[in-house]
Image 1 (tube, helix red, strand yellow):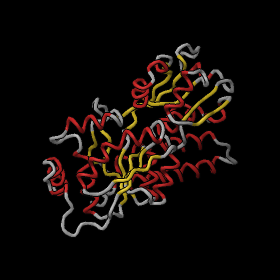
Image 2 (cartoon, helix red, strand yellow):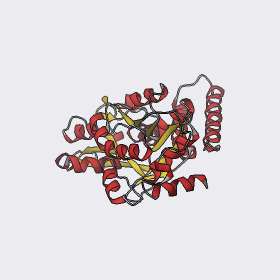
Image 3 (cartoon, helix red, strand yellow):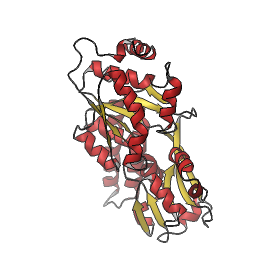
Image 4 (cartoon, one colour):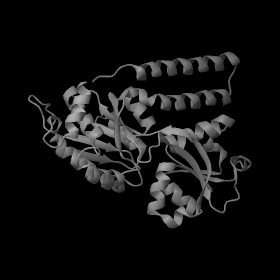
Length: 333
């Protein structure tokens, strides 16, 4: 009921209680928002800044932004507590919740109404590869571009659903492997610098708008199962009052009396119409992805005995069960 009341206050406009600090407000003088790298750091920063400025005005708190070029950079910033809240993929969020005293407070909602997005493999439009089986007929002969190991769509999902499932490792299957962001990997395929690359449907929509000529040179070879949307995590050691105010301001953005102007700013970021309240339980599907990848790797590894393999599988199962219990447990308000 308290959370609902805060949300209603934010919807009511600038005179709402949530828009001004209450008596005895937290001593925090500014917040730092971490931005998941989409394209380049400056591009991501430019896309997020208008919405962050609005949130800063609503909360009466300066909001700095930290835009990095890699997932690893954002993960390090969160671990060093240089970020108070951040927009992150499910894998980064898992690390943040497990190790960095953070909790999920919201999840992206798509303007199309989709419940998530999909990982894809891209090839040049005129590539002789027509099916995924064609790809696996060419070990050691193709050039591959993928995302960082913390990227769900750029690495974890294709590695789990395609390579580990066949007892393969993408880093050794291909003739060469380069690691970059989705935008640069798509450009590499379009320019025939690589033969196949990972990407995702959300980033491809943005790529099509920004690089229509290069987009026309691409073809999707494979599409994954549904991946839940990215989330926003926040430091759990911030005061409950501040966490509630930030969450209420974030999840009401694009839904109040200034909805049209705010929606225009949201569209600069992603295929997004706002954020919905969420908790750590949102990360269970991402924990399952990691779990399935670890099990498949265990099955394909070389073991001194079957007992050793079974011991490893038992450890993976136990750790996964413990993680799911932790994610499903109630979080702080």
